[in-house]
Length: 331
Image 1 (cartoon, one colour):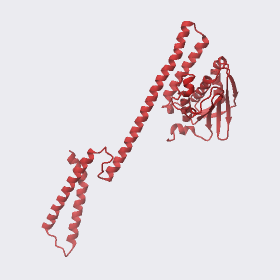
Image 2 (cartoon, helix red, strand yellow):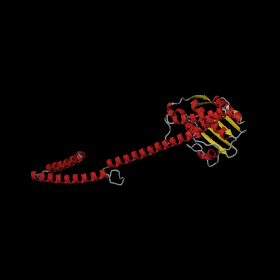
Image 3 (cartoon, one colour):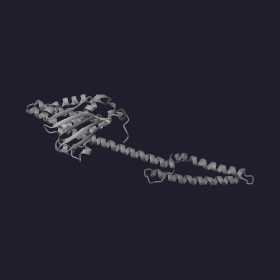
Image 4 (tube, helix red, strand yellow):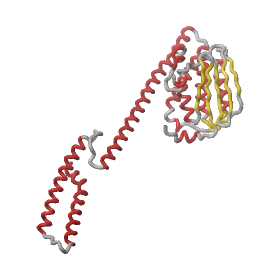
């Protein structure tokens, strides 16, 4: 079977040989001074057949050797087509390996997050069981239930991150209204921790998805409350420039170390604060940033240890968020 396939692909060479021989015969026959004899023509055909046979044997040996060494990038190619095919296959293999590594990385990240999430969710459940045994305190129950709701929402949005394009609706959103609703939802925490709230709001319309945007801002506000001391202060300001609209959330909490600032939005990064003050999955700010980018926004962070942390959500004016969601730019 291999020999037959080999002959099938080598037939063009036979055609070239025979055509060349025919041209030579035609040139000799057309010369009046030359006499072409049948024996001479037959002799030439025999020589051509021998040459053709040696050529085929040589090609067959080289082809079989090349087939055995197909995966060796240093083995010689028998034709330009073979060389180009090998390059194309090599590029496809590299792309496949790269994609496989990315999939494995996402699977590992997903596994690590799920494991971390299970550990996180066990804490408020254990507290609720303890409260049940010692006498329920409504205030404590509310706090633990809020934590459970937060972890469940975080896991839900994380699961939807890869299928974001199927679950969004870009509309005009009133930032002032969203912020006030979020603050209202955290009112008990503000009161119990005696955290002072300063709002500098004005009617501000941005293009976004109200549900996803509320989740993003809730992550930022939850983080501020988590790391702001009792009787601390949190301010939320809406501002605008010719280039963009801004939502600035600032607290006078423990701050973020300078070495941690470049990585606060990395997946699973907890930093010094996450390890020293509260056990954290390191997914809140990552999800907030990823969802912001998908909506055409982005978040920046400025901080100084022991003084403040300031999260700014940027809403560029001259930007079509829909195009980024449907056809994200290549990295």
